[in-house]
Length: 339
Image 1 (cartoon, helix red, strand yellow):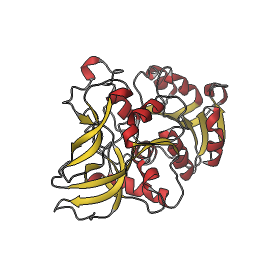
Image 2 (cartoon, one colour):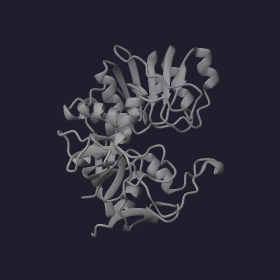
Image 3 (cartoon, rainbow, N blue to C red):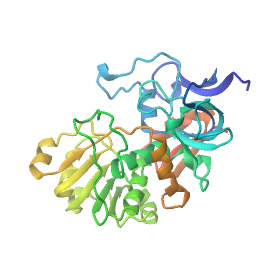
Image 4 (cartoon, helix red, strand yellow):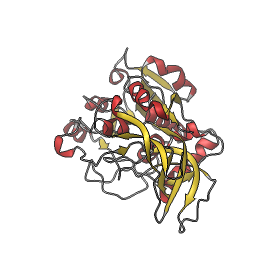
């Protein structure tokens, strides 16, 4: 590879996994406050899948109209190879990880499915020494989502889903239900809630039961056999990492004054019932945040929290990775190995 080109996965049109093209692209140049990172691994997140198909689940007026070609993906782990003159916290050779330009590049792609990516220094954190690039790449979006919902929002940007600021609730001694506990956000939410002293009820399919026990969940509900709302009552918090139809059913699990956190709130239709029962329903948009990632990364470094990787693919097989990601029941994260 020359100094001016790199291998990357690009979109020239929206569609299924087959539209992902592994090809040459220009190496990005950095500006003030930015760092160029040689990528060792990148992970797949739901927004990657949504952008690839043009956000077809959204109303037409909300769908992106980008200039093709574009490089999708947000999460990377790698090594710094260039820093802008005004960057002082990172140096060439540092091992780093980041969620890149999110949600700013939500509709245009952040450039992570590539051998090289440019990252704002404010979005970057030093990679925890105790984990490898594969597991570090699996962390940023999922870990920051769980962190900003459960621990600390960390910003005052307008909330695209509601008119008030999302506010995490106290977890110590409380009962927390995690729906979608086996997925990328869910398995990290289970661990963060346990770290904070909560009693955790994990809701997932039977495939994830052993993992949930290993991660410290106090109770497991196999939703394919039992509706969680039929066996769980008087919880203090439900965090739903799945979305979809009938999210209002989670209200029946909560005590008056409890909270329902929706990672994907689109389609929630239980506002009136929640108000009647005194339950707070809240959501937020995860945002890139290097200092938060560094803080959460200390838990990865000391083993308090771990990233579960379901399967790895090569960068050149992003089509195969996206095809696999569409399947239900993925455990943890899917990672693209770049270098």
